[in-house]
Length: 149
Image (cartoon, rainbow, N blue to C red; front, side, top):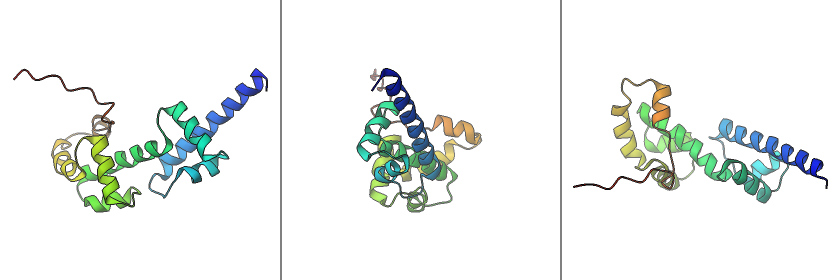
């Protein structure tokens, strides 16, 4: 394959990956798995996973769970749904997996977040609340400064 053909194939892959990411953003509450996403992009599951990680720095599953947790945070801030209702609303089928992943990304359990966030978000516009409460992985969180106590 020539350099030009290789470059064109790379651009086609990037376009497919953008469509996969857009589908995850749109259909995060639906049952999605890597195999289904790969079929929709006309790629093998392995190739999709490797290419997605190269392009976006995380696996398709990790990206999906981050979108679900972001939406769950917004629903929990509203305060009118239980943690279980939020779990199923965002497309998770296991409360245990949802709670574990939520705690991993947010740093506290969904119930603690629901309790604390409803007070913190009072008077804050929804777009600002989304920005300041965006989930980050523990490995991405800045290290805590050493205490001088």
